[in-house]
Length: 295
Image (cartoon, rainbow, N blue to C red; front, side, top):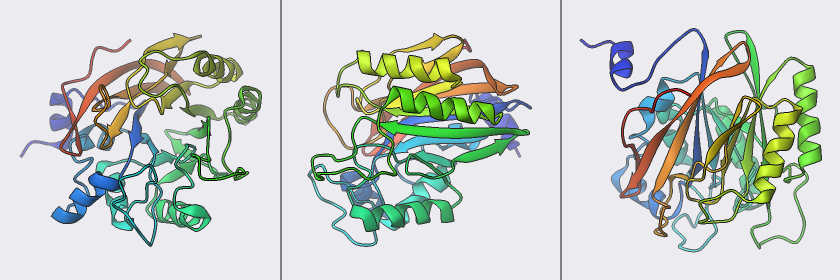
């Protein structure tokens, strides 16, 4: 029988004493994606194809675009997303153990739905960032804090903000990062920002990323444009401006492609990083090829 280590190594996934973090972009488990999973009674369906990458990681982080709800409608075709509670198995089964909820869809199921989502995720061992939660995961003696911020939380449906959801305020975010660094924590920042369907990062994304890295963030994982944008290093910290869609049901050009970003941490800092291309086929994400070489 082939060992798990041998199988993962053959696919290009390495396991070391260092801490390996894999980040994905937007995950939307409602609308057509959720309906297909429900019809097939296969809740892992949307993310089974990318599970090898997350299952071999110490921390698997994505942006969850669809809050869970005890009540529907789940299959709406508009821009309000509500996912079936069973769809949490797509995350747990794929090895995702951390999510950001700081995005423009965080309140799509209302205040009750947000509370339900937080409880459901934490009940299933998934750390929650971006809604006033302590998203701290310890690996190899290092405490990783995930901080999450969004350019918008109202999605055109609310006239006021929920104070738990951090906005894209570079100064406040930098202060959060600095405070975590003062406690000896390693910080990963989730950034929900950018112009939709544009393949280049805008000035707001760049300024925000630069501010949090200057304050001590070790890595920035971006999403919201729904297409892949460029990555770069700032002071040795990798910044992925947009990882695109990991799983969604959009049909606009470029929205069916995404990236997974792998960062290997040693001593609380990123020692090397690389990306892996993904593609959405029939409402499910899949890996396209082995990882590129480390940078």
